Image 1 (cartoon, rainbow, N blue to C red):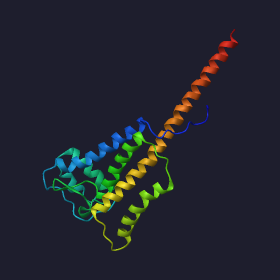
Image 2 (cartoon, rainbow, N blue to C red):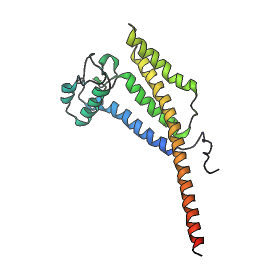
Image 3 (cartoon, rainbow, N blue to C red):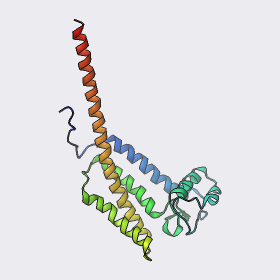
Image 4 (cartoon, helix red, strand yellow):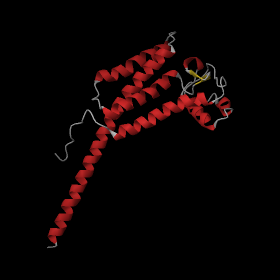
Length: 201
């Protein structure tokens, strides 16, 4: 019925979510490639770092590959980049910590899922993404508890997947709404043209 959104299909091929998947998986691969393309054992930033500060600017500027340099600068701005909390590839520290990389990879996995299956967002799905990362990261922040990279990767993955499940639902519903509005506008134009044509007779 015009003006009323059709029920959301659960299975199909959702192009807009596929685009999100391409973006997310490309970014995850870029994060893996950046340390792999640099000479072995040349990128280490130590364990001092804060989110939002560019403490490693000079060290990153010494990276010869401009592609890797840009990626590492983004990590310096958006992540603490502590080496003990980061994965090591090609004996080089990754540009983002393990938890951040887990979130990015989780977003890609979630986008792959919602490309074919749109899941109705339930409260327990949200909790599945929020509670593990909140406990692991929160306890580490306010107590002497120290997590490990396996837990950081796992909790980041959960958060990323759940976030993309929510985003995938929103994008599909918005896409359906836009299509419905376009159909409605075309119908209005058609009726208007028909009215003009009949008035000229």
